[in-house]
Amino acid sequence: MTDCTEGSSGGSERMAFIYDKCKVFFRKMAGELVLPQTKLIGEDKLQFARTPFSVAFQAGWFRFILTTVHIFYGKGAKEDERRLEEITSVAKFIKERAKKEDENYILLGDFNIFSTGDATMKALEKQGFYIPEAIREHPSDYGKTKHYDQIAFKLKIEPGMTVFSEPMQRAGTFDFFATVYRPQDIEIYRGLFDEKNTKGKPEKIIENYYLQTWRTFQMSDHLPMWIELKIDFSNQYLENILE
Image (cartoon, rainbow, N blue to C red; front, side, top):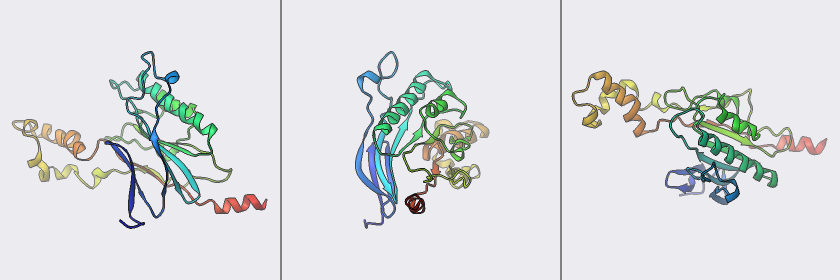
């Protein structure tokens, strides 16, 4: 591995941060977010169902801490009480940390938010997190109907140093099913299907199994989200000191 190959800073068995070492460097800080006893969730005094993980990076002028979450899902209600409390707790925890530190926080991952108008989304906004419109308008489940995944910002930068440009809208989701495991590719993979899901079943049932179950197990039932951020604030810096 050379200095300009991809590197990773991991967290748990289920996640990792992958980055280009030519453009981003790891600032030697990584750890889990664990709530203090006084701020546990609900009457049962619970920690997060899946512990959020934070890692510090820098790209160009932009120093930031990425915190990834996988919020509790529950029974499928769009505003599950524990899910709402988890989102509120992690957002409030980071907001309080941001007040004390000279850091920019990016909170991202699977929030299990059904719609951008739900209380779960508003819980992020109430704690002062900014979610770009270009992220809000893109559903991230494979069926493109739910807004499970989000990228939210809590920034501490000088006025005029714009990290994300709304007019350019350089963000969205990547639909990998337009390239791999396409609907028309079913015959290529039919031989790999579990027989219990295909033997004696009508073709419509087999197609549904392929589209909604089998191929999501090969890839994911979520579409990756992406966003392009500005990391060079040299012009704004010079303008500020010349004023």
